[in-house]
Image 1 (cartoon, helix red, strand yellow):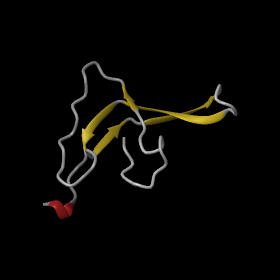
Image 2 (cartoon, one colour):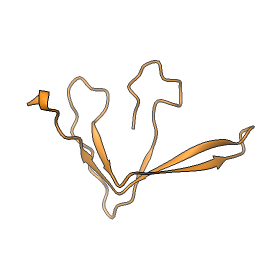
Image 3 (cartoon, helix red, strand yellow):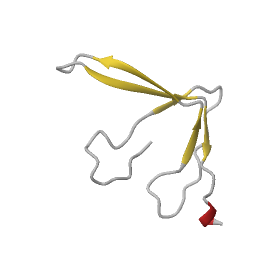
Image 4 (tube, helix red, strand yellow):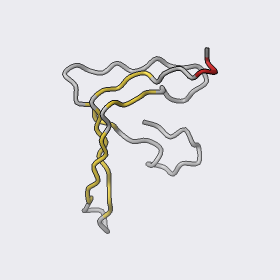
Length: 78
């Protein structure tokens, strides 16, 4: 996942979502003019944990999904 905000701090503009699937998920199609591929994650869970080892411990998050699908088209796109 990517944050398209150009002012996002380095290292905070993207996250990884792990998808538990037997086969490799297919990426949604590219859309003209967008810096990312809009997607919907089915069964998305967020698990917080304490990450240690880089100075002060901090809270981090693990993102996991059951499935990834292309985002539905908006009504204005029809």
